[in-house]
Amino acid sequence: MVSASNTTKIAHVDCPGGGQVWVDNNILYIGHMRPPSGTTLVDISDPRNPRKICTIPVPPGWHSHKVRAQNGLMIINHERFGQEGPADYGGGLAIYDVSDPEKPEPISKWITGGKGVHRYDFDGRYAYISPTDEGFIGNFVMILDLIDPKNPVEVSRWWIPGQNVGAGEVYPWENYVAPRCHHPLRMGDRLYVSYWHHGMFILDISDMSKPRAIAHVNTSPSFPHPTHTCLPIPQPLKGRDILVVADEDVAKLRPHAPSFAWIYDITDETNPLSLSTFQVPGLDPDGAPQPPMTGCHQPSERFAGSIIPFAWFAQGLRLVDIADPFAPKEVGHFMPDPPEGAERASSNDVTIDDRGLIYLIDRVRGVDIIETTVF
Image (tube, rainbow, N blue to C red; front, side, top):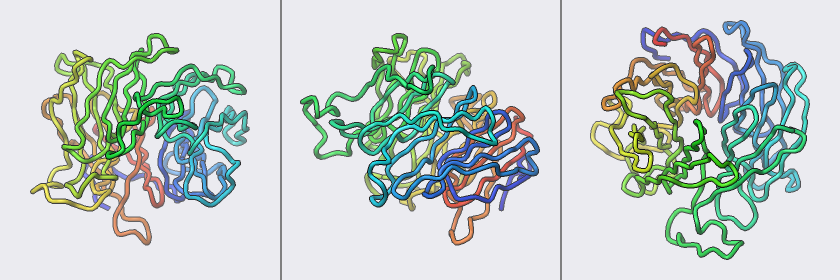
């Protein structure tokens, strides 16, 4: 374990590895990567002594590696993971009442076609998701209304023209990577949408029933990493509106140096412009190809001011200050030990809570709870 002087591990949750961590009302929600572990709830009222409450399982062939909770509701994804297992389990979103987190109660399950749902945003009422469905190639954008969680209602869907081959659209990407919405994030009446090797989109959802694209940027194939997350910053920085875009260090179009994060100026949101990039210092000295999962993965969708925690795969936790969006800089880091049986860390997701504590999950095993003085 290696850390900066301003980060300290205060506890560890030993559990199967996962895809996402989230905190709501002193409950840590963990979405696991591999079945039969689905979703674990942990009481973190005393963060130095976390207490596991329960784990909700999933059958073989499916996983629920993403989780969000708000207003007493928890939503978890069901997505195909391998070929074995019950086909009739169905991909989609499972919705739970967690008003008593000791006893999560299933409310309903919204079913989609195809492989299911990957990642999503949730504001307590609406879920902004990336499902698949019959007739579509790849994941697309959907808005679900959960005002009645027993009966989720599709508000709208949006896709790149050419994905809906079931409706007769001409598919133009036979010699390229298939389109895939990774996930949307909402701020105000905009959705900021990562679309894998098809770049990023900004959607106007002032009319939620009719999402409308107002911008598109794609750095691939010049940079061969897929666009993973588009994180809008709520306050102006240096007088500019800012979007942080993380490329994931997997599924590279060709061998390449590790992926990194981009800082975009979206003051004119119809014309996003890259101001700068951030790479972990010293990670890419000469641009030589390195193995997948060496570089960037996911910024925390919650952050403090201008300091954004990142899960940087084999580089652990990186705390990046973008107060000057023209020159982002690292202001702290925490390097976890590799899990037993692994050669290196695989930090997959990170979040923070209202106390400023950081929760970093490894893709293979475990969650570290980290205190920092930088917030």
